[in-house]
Structure formats: C-alpha cells, structure tokens
Image (tube, rainbow, N blue to C red; front, side, top):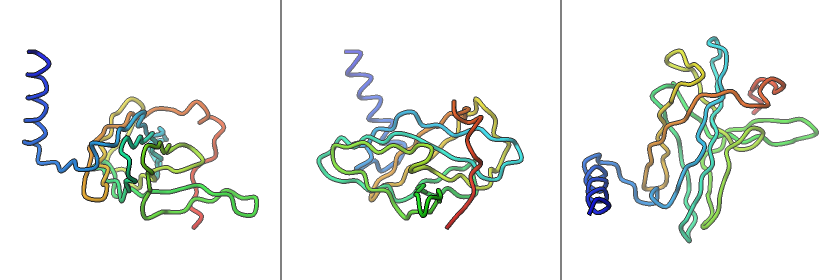
Length: 156
C-alpha cells in the first residue's frame, strides 16, 4: 500500500509541476557536477552521465540554469595536435546508450555566474530534449585532476 501511495503521490507531483517529461523519462542523469573555480571565474564547466533507456535516439537540444547567464553544449576536439573547444547545437544520445559529459570531451560551458558559486553548492539545471525537459541538480566540487588541469580557453 505504501508503494502504491508513493507512486500516486509522485504521479500527482509530476502532473502538478506542469513539466512535459515526454522522452525525458527515458533518460536518466547520473553524477551531475560543476567544476569549482575561483570566485572571479566567468566561465565554469559542467559534467554528467546521460543514459538513454529507450530504443530510439533522443536529442539534447539545450541546457539552462538560473545560476548562469547562458549555458552552452561544447565538445573538446584535437586539431593539429592542439586541443580546441567548440560549441555544438545539440547532443544525440543513441537508443540504449550512454553519453558522458566529462573533462576533455563533451561538457557544459557555464557562462557568467549570477552569484558566487562555491564548492558544496547545488546548482539547478533544466535539460531540454526534443519535445521534453528534465530538471536536475548538480553539485559543485573539485575535480581530482583539477590541480594539474589547464584553465578553459575558447578556441572556435
């Protein structure tokens, strides 16, 4: 009975929230985090693991957060022996697959924080998929490799 009541409460909350989950319910997000940076930093990076449990491809079209002026999808590529970051319009997550947003790969560029962001903070994000959205929280933390990692520079 308790499981049934919990399920009913969850469905009611979802309906009351007005969020169109659509395809987003077939995507799970794990280990969402933002790399901590000095308080003067104007660009931070965000990471997560996206699992698509459906049989069809799902496209992440954009990400937003009230904590930043803008959020961009980016990827790091190697051109002529140099690492470059470039903005991408969307991120395809094939059916029954996993895509990792991680250092030196796909990631979120978090531009112009609207408030001071410190290690231990939780940042809300909205992931916008084609025809659906999903709200998540990401923890601000230091990356184990952060001590030796170069700072983010834009190379478009």
